[in-house]
Amino acid sequence: MAKLPGKTQPAPVTADAAATGQVITAGVDTHRDFHWAAVKNALGQVLGTRRFAATGAGYQALLAWLRGFGTVTAVGVEGTGSYGAGLTRYLTGEHVRVVEVNRPNRQKRRRQGKTDPLDAISAAAATQSGDATAAPKLRTGPIESVRVLRGTRDTWIKARTAAWNTLRALLVTAPDDLREQLTGLTPARLLAACLALPGTDNTGTGLAHALLDAGTATRIALHDLATMISHYDQAVTRLNTQLTALITLIAPRTLAQHGLGPDTTGQLLITAGNNPDRLRSEPAFAMLTGTAPHQASSGLTDRHRLNRGGDRHANAALYRITITRMATHQPTRDYVTTHRTPNRSNGKHIIRKLKRYIARNIYPHLTADLAALQHLTP
Image 1 (cartoon, rainbow, N blue to C red):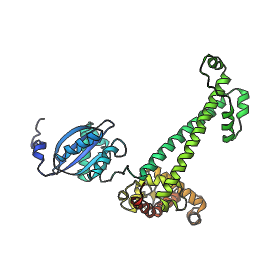
Image 2: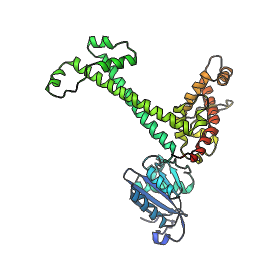
Image 3: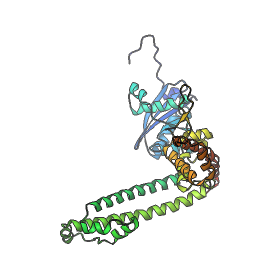
Image 4: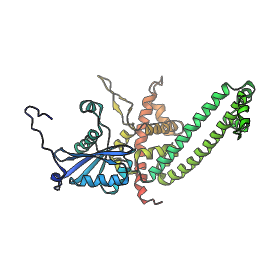
């Protein structure tokens, strides 16, 4: 590389020269099959970059390589909740401080380019400068159990919805006699009627001849779709039972608050994570859930607007809690009546304020439940 006029080029730093008891900061760009790691010393010099396998042996080799440069103060990891989850668990178990790092911004990538080693160096720089400070969510406690069960349940619900949509679309073009037989039924009666339609276990020539008739094919398809929906219903019910039992055990105080159920409580637990130290304060929780107000003042107008940031799943949970309280919680109903304008044009602002209040109300109960998790044993 050519020297720039008036600039002194830093001398390269080797691992042997660096291993003198100095402190270092590392960054890791994670992928499914491998991770790229980068090391910086206290002066910000890049000591080295290297690729490691995303396996248990690879994690051990990565940490040994880092410690060869000196004392590891922190490791910034991209994707601590996805491709970096295994590495985060390993480093945390080895008592290494891990910091969650977001991907580099687009402006920086346009200036520097995009490679895995550069991303690892950027992660180390963000950790060293203090731009990245968030502790990663732990993936080993009961909150992880809630996340796994909810994710599985949501997958079943989406599959069930898709099956219902397909079934109803088939009814639109079904033969007249079949459509008249099944039109106007409630979902439960429609499902039972489709289950009663003749299915088939035949895979031979007889089936092929039977399927020459479009009406027969439609009946078989409706029967199979109804069977799938019934299976999905049972799976969703089973998972809801498991989630209710688990959340009742680990978050009794939060669940006892007005308007909260297992679904909304479970989402707030997932957003908070298994480690309560991630929630530094109640305002930080409000920012995390997207309920902290944003200034939208101008001139003589002093107002706030909705916060479009934060965890939108948690924000949606707080919205459902708010709507429930507006319908069933008398103090909330009184507040709405008092603050609503005659033309009811400020409904969104009332809901925004209520969501902020509810986040403040839930925070101490949620943190108390999270702190009590350490006393629970399988």
